[in-house]
Structures are given as C-alpha cells and as structure tokens.
Length: 128
Image 1: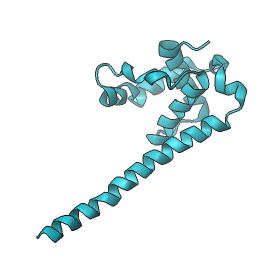
Image 2 (image 1 turned 90 degrees about the vertical axis):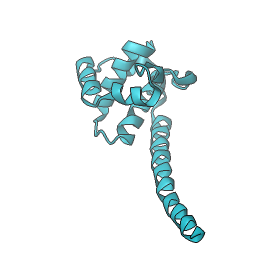
Image 3 (image 1 turned 120 degrees about the vertical axis):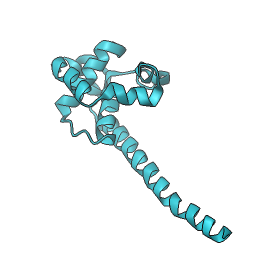
Image 4 (image 1 turned 180 degrees about the vertical axis):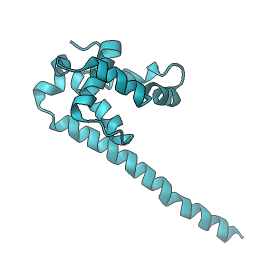
C-alpha cells in the first residue's frame, strides 16, 4: 500500500515541474525582451509618447487585469505595482506588461502592450 502512495506522489511531480518550467520560460522571455530592447527604449517614458491611452484603458478592462492582480496580491490589486523597486524604468514597465501578455496568452500586439503600459505609467509609475 505504501508503494502505491509513493507512486501517486511521484506521478504528480512532473505536472508541477511543467508548470514551473512554463512560468520560468515566460519570465525568461520577458527578460530577453528587456535585454534586447534598444537602450533608448529601455529607459525613458518617451516610449509612451504616441501610445493610445483609450486603447490601453479598454484592454485593461477587457483582459481583467485588475481582477487578476487582486487575486495575486489581495486588496484592490494595486500592491502589485512597484514591487520592491523592481520596475524602475519605463522600459522595465513595458517589459512586465509584455511578460503578462505572454504568460496569460493575451495575444496583444506591441502597440497594445505599449498602450497598457502607458496607462499604468500614467496611473501608478509616473516615469518622465
């Protein structure tokens, strides 16, 4: 009987490993996108200059970003912003939105990711 219990436990581990690999892969993709961004785009908020704010607001509502963030951190979800200083440039902010896009398989185009990041910058980060 004990042998069967160990076997069941062993069988569940590969599923957990696959989930961890998927999350790790998404994080690596996000990090790679940040590293490959041209230096001028990685720093300043000028990357949001021509962003469609109305589109960003609509995409945040349609993709239920606030609800997801609330599930992750509780409260009103705003605690997810500025996590221990990890996001300290406009480029990193855009990269995090791209990571969510990839991880959640949202299918947003680059200009849509920029629009969402521009709204977050306006409302939470205020990068200049």
